[in-house]
Image (tube, rainbow over the protein chains, first blue to last red):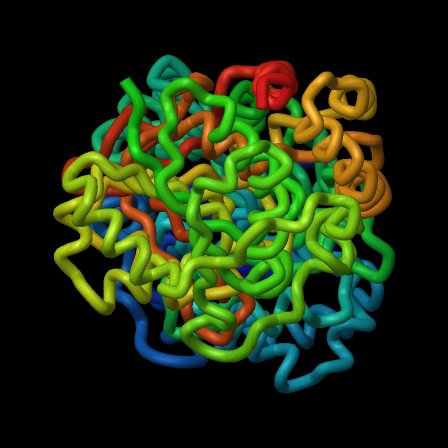
Length: 319
Length: 319
């Protein structure tokens, strides 16, 4: 049994890892990919994605370019220091040129179309800013009734942010879209930094990827070089990097176990103040009773089982 | 060696405990107390404080009534559910009537006067909304140069708030004053919920207070009955309460050890958005290197040694 998956991404080094996890998983049927501004520009993210799909021999998966800028304001210019100027650690030029380009519809329209083709079965995995999801909800609010689930890598509940003191990059790059997405009445799982910063891939595992029999895994190992440089210098002080986007893929597919993941009220700060882009997760209730808050639709993954890096390396080996 | 201490409070059950800690400490010379809106109204807080001082035989400590409302907006009406209608669990009527009332100056003026009398020696302990401190800074910005240190019970860094999902009561009751206070260039120690929620007093210790030889300690034991009711029902699901204000007193005096307390950039959300009143503590650097951030003036106490409740019970026994 596989589930149809729509991936929304801003490829991105860890987006590439998430793509790899999905391609390797026996549970996922990747039916479409939309790209969005974020780590790099939306068109560049599509090019990266198409090249990675070609490398994996999966040119059959359609890729749609999505929103070039957030609902409010302009594209921030990409996370060049983290992901390199091409978004994938300088590796774009050495990946195979795809036979054809992106499809002609935009990402939000692709998502709406796929929701009709797979009613109540489609799983959405969003690992970039949530502009495409918000646009799709604005174009057709009934989308919420046709989707089986939405999993978002984004936000920070009780840990520091990575873009500001309190905000995570995907959310702060389009807070208004995030607020529309997390307050829509569909079952949403948020995989924030609380969970993803705990799952790191170190240099030894990167070298295992570089020595893999899979060309896709080797490309991941190579592009992780830049990413680990950044994490060592700026984030962790050791040569290892957080597995944000692929962890969200694994959580969505039930391939990596969540430990603490209550459904609680969530909203996004859309002010111009110091908390802009913060995911405000109301976890006060958890002091008294751990568990879901009645009426809440957003599951906040605070912890997952240890050891996801090893699973990811195994998955990428199989692509 | 004692240090001159100005206490700013909204007495309040845990304010009473902080007062007791200060009165019992051989290190503190309590030279003045200002009251402020918060748990109860500023005038009621002064009456509670005067009665508690009388009970302790310390009517010599002057009490000044301070700000009745925050810099922006109105007094919120007090935390009746937490502290009772009189602020001290219904105990006001059974405490001795003070021989005289508050002094004629207001709390901000008292603080300024004390800063001149004890230049570079005065320690400020603020356990309510920070309106009086902000007013004093506005009246005379040179105050920052005459104060040895400021310790504030307030805020929440990486734990949920208690007034909103992200804001603690003292700060959310006057965010504008808090922002003025935490961005002033004086050495400030913030003792937020991160630390205080870890130090709880349970029913067995409350009963020890009720059986104490000290009338002050017995009064504390009695007023804690209401407080523990609230904590059991609403906050913790067990009969124990957080020792917010007295922990800040102990930290200020160096009588209870801090474990993690880096100096980091701090600002207060003063928007009208969902994060209003949040203390935004930029702890991102702590992922890489634990320790102080250069140029930061606010020390954020994230953890203290366990076992403060036992120390507090011993202190109150001595009042």
